[in-house]
Length: 315
Ligand code: G3H
Ligand code: 13P
Ligand code: ZN
Image: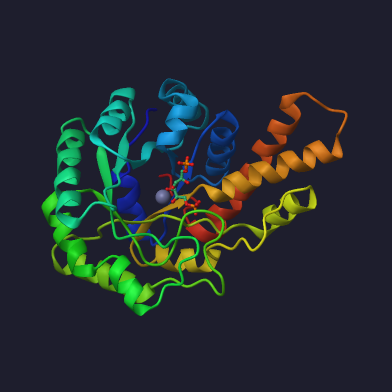
């Protein structure tokens, strides 16, 4: 068994109307919690690493632990660079053995995003690595998005087709109303399903059959985790995320990869705070880190069942 790319995962996900979870990893407990949940559900999974995670943990350690996860579980696992800022970081990850990379040029103007993405695609493809890019701006924490703002920042369906055509990128992250972090919506959760439908239809019309789209900022901000954090001393107020049913819906409309980081952070913090509060005399890290690993496994298992639908996606 070895790490795989996301190619086959996405083909099966699109056809099966489900999404593969892409979970941000920073340490051993997160990796083990995520892959053990995926194994228990017989589901493929993507483990992704941000630039700050690379700096925190060192790609050598992360790669070695992810190889161990493949050996332990035998499930399909892709190792992915999340929000790669430049070609240099992309190269570092490919050299370290990552099977998938994201180049995030969404903050550049359109032509620059096209040119830089194309360069990354050429480099990655010549080494058998797949590429995700991003088009459009995810909403900010406090953004109240009206129609004009949505048109200015969300992904334009025609531009998405042009972008895929010109860059040859393997999957595309789109902006349809989600945002990173724990404070996604002030009122009800809203995403632009109509725009998603248009993007999917236009890509199909243009000959990109079953083209995989990616949803960032897709944590549900599990309220049980938030309440546990707050019960044991945290101050996380007004946090709100993407309801599982909306994610499930998006997964039936061409979203093949759903990114989750905040939910893991909340789960880890909740479990550790609870452990510290309930066992004030304990100081063995295996106690509270173990509790965090177990809770992450529980949260990811639930997510596969309710939001992703990827149960039994392994052949
Ligand atoms: O989308 C970003 C991820 O949540 C990673 O965050 O840069 O703090 O590791 P980070
Ligand atoms: P969340 O903050 O919603 O978990 O999003 C994570 C993400 O998009 C990582 O790229
Ligand atoms: Zn993201």
